[in-house]
Amino acid sequence: MSIGTSLIVLFAAILHASWNALLRGGDDRLWSMTIMCIAIALACTVMVPLVPVPAVASWGCVALSASLHTGYNLFLVRTYRQGDLGQTYPIARGASPLLVSLGASIFARELPDALNLIGVLLVSGGIIALAFQGRTIGRQTLLFALGTGCFIGAYSVTDGIGARLSGSSVGYTVWMCLLWGLLAPTTYVLLRDARSLLRGRRETLVAASGGLASLLAYGIVIVAMTRGAMGPVSALRETSVVFAALIGRFFLRENLSGYRIMACLVVAVGAVLIGHAG
Image 1 (spheres, one colour):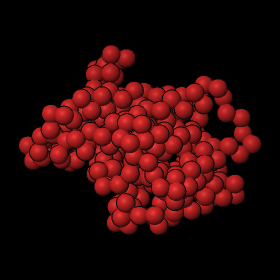
Image 2 (spheres, rainbow, N blue to C red):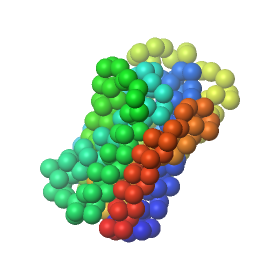
Image 3 (spheres, helix red, strand yellow):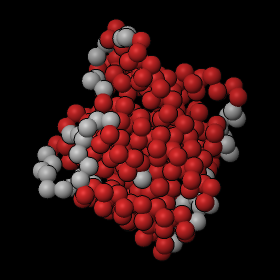
């Protein structure tokens, strides 16, 4: 993975942390996530005529990933109902680089070299350490956060393989996100009702902007996974927890202790090793 690819993945990490902070800061996170997905679907509808149609071989991955993303939405919303951003976000994100590396080695025969592997382990270890600083984590919080991490790992590997089969990573991203964006409001209506989707203009625009940031962030990651190993790309993306910790401190008034700062430094060292390996 080149230095240029590493830098754009780090930019995606900042975007990713930002939309997660928007979601965590909202009063009704299921509604916020659904509006984000509607914005994603609308943006992708506009882009569909402008991008190549993915190769037939990748359409199974498109459908599977959209379904996994829908499950991820539900688990993420449930996770944020249990704990604060600085605690639940690291657990959910920290497990995924290891899961992606494992899945890539099994399904894509992609083994990271020693330096990349050390970087992935440092990033994951530092991320997970952010959640533990003498506080008790409830069983339900832990289960939903780890479940969210499993969804992240599953859809990341699916998208890494699908984008490579598609012949166009941009086309794959647009079609997958379009299907994902359509499944989310359908799920919302089944769980609640259609009428409650209509709310104030300001909160709708805020949620929609988070959706567009999410689309750009994950689109960058999918493109990066066609140019580099999936595990290291996933690990670099998950450095978003460092940015999430800062956002949580300065905008959501969450605590940022010396322990968390040290864990963030471990993540940063892992990211530097991955970049150096590139």
